[in-house]
Each structure stands twice: as structure tokens, then as C-alpha cells.
Image 1 (tube, rainbow, N blue to C red):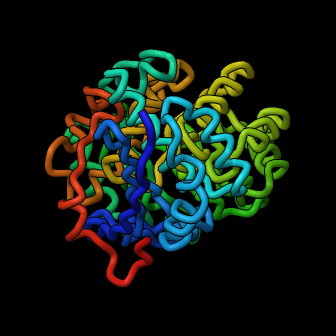
Image 2: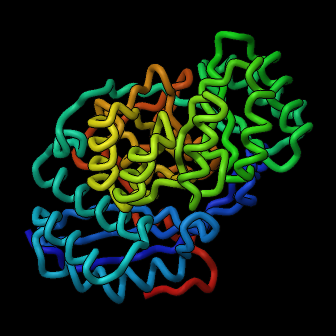
Image 3: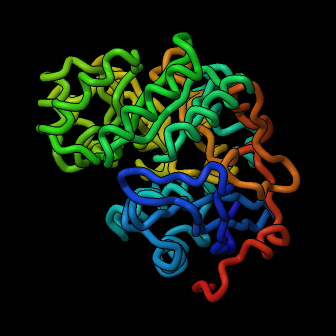
Length: 377
Ligand SMILES: [Mg+2]
């Protein structure tokens, strides 16, 4: 099997206004992503999704499209997708970082290999260690506290057993949001906060104890992504359970977080960590150090979400029952793939069955989503 073409589709998705996310890192109301289709001489097509958000990783829709067409396509055209490990090394040798863009190409390669070998991706990467029915949480942005409580209450009625709240810029309002949500959902529902790096070390040490009475499962990325010493200081000073998210894009950052005992949990996901395989490497490293992992999100559409599901299913060190994961992107969009959208029910996501990613897309259905005047290679 040989790769014959790499196509890119810059698309724009609008987040449902009722769930529009604002965090300490900024607003996320519009998603300008790139869908990748890798074609082969056997007629199989592999799909990938570059969930690029400039404020998150510095990657953009135009940049991702250019990198895929001008660099990564040259690495893979004429090659066999089953040599994906070598192809991914060659991509790494042709461009630094660009994690979300590389993840999209890897996703499409693994989708092809799964289709060729008639296996789901989780089988290709080690087999099922978690159930295909994955408990998830619902994430609520910096909304008015009463609004947040209303949304949380509705989601719990729908079957969610865990809620995540953004906090950071307004200490009193943030605290009120958490209090009203805790009152609305009761004591049995898991609750955590995500600061997206919005507190200084001193603020975090001051603020976190004020949340103690709300029985938080953990505090996610309280301090800036670059300050791993600061994160370790916050964990040691407050005794709170800490999750590193923005602080761990790469394997070496995970090593540093572990070495400095800066976190109890590390958030991983294919986009942020440069692919399913690199996420798995971080997950295995964390496991050897007794640190659990968790699936974070950048509001993926269904293709990126499928990749997250397969990674979760294949990862023993992602304790989904204790810490339901953030595999939730498609819930925030009205537009869904026409054939096999990801299924969500009662606070769970279902890892798609089928070969490869288990999600089917047609070029035709992407046309109405095309970003006007985007770079089209
Ligand atoms: Mg986070």
C-alpha cells in the first residue's frame, strides 16, 4: 500500500453559544481547524484533525496547512503508511514542535493502518485496557456563577458524574461560581477547577485553601505553563492534588514535572503531545513514577475525539473511573459528521467501533464548513 496524495481542508466550527468557553487563557468561540485526508493506491483514505488554537500552541490553520503540504506530504507520499514510526521520525526531523499538526498526520496514518489491518486503533497500540464506554466530565467556562450552576445542574441530570469549572481572573466571582455549582450538584459529583495558568505562585498558594470546603478532586494548571518549580511549590505548600496540563507538551517536560514532584496527575492528549504514540510514551513514563494521566481537550471535532478515545482505551494509566476525562469536544458543536458521529450518552463517550479511527467523513460534507479565503493547497 502506497500513499498517493495528502489533502487538507481548513474548516471553521462555531462553538454553541450556550457553551462558549472563556478561560484565563482567553476565549474559544470559533474553531479554525484543518482536516487531513491521506489517500492510497488501494483506495483507502485515512483521516486526521489538526485542532490548532493559536493561543494554545502557537499553531494556526494557515500554518498547519502549509506545514502539511510543504513538508509532511513530502515525507509520506510514495511510502507505506504501515511504516508510520519511521515516517513520524522523518516529520520530526523536518520541523520542530507543531504538535497538533503532527498529531493530525499521525492520526490519518494510524487510521489507514487500522483500515488495512481491519483493527481499531486501540488494538494497534497495545489493546484495550479501559472499557470502550468512557466516563467524561463537562467543562464550564468563566460564566456568570448562576449560569454555571444551571448548566452544571442540567448536565448532572443528563448523567454526568464530574464537572470542571474554569477559574482565575476574579477571585471572589470564581469562588462564588464554585460554591453555587457545588450547591447545585450536591456532594457526590466530582468537581475540579482549571486555572489555565492564570494564577501566580503566590496567588495560587493563597487561593487554593479557600476552595478546600468544596472538596475538589484536583486543581488543574494553577500557575503559568513555563514555571514547573512554581507548580511544585504550590503543590507542596497547599497539599492540594495538582494536575499539570499546559506545562506538559513534551516528554522532557513530563520528565521535569515528575522529577520535581510538581503534579499528582498529568493531562495528555494526542494534539497537545504531538500524537497518540507520544502521548502513550508520556503516559508510560508517568506510570513508572506512580503519576496518573488524564485526557485533556482542545475542543476537538469528531476525528480528533476518536483519536482521544482510542488512546484512553489503550492506556492502563488513565484511571477514568476515578477521574472522568475531558473527551467532550463534539458536545460543543452543532455540526456532526453525517455517517458515524461519536456517540455520547449518560455522561459517557463511546469509543467508535470499526477499523482505524472508526469515524467516516466525506469531502462533500466538509465543503459547507470550509473557511472562506483560507490557504488551500
Ligand atoms: Mg486544562
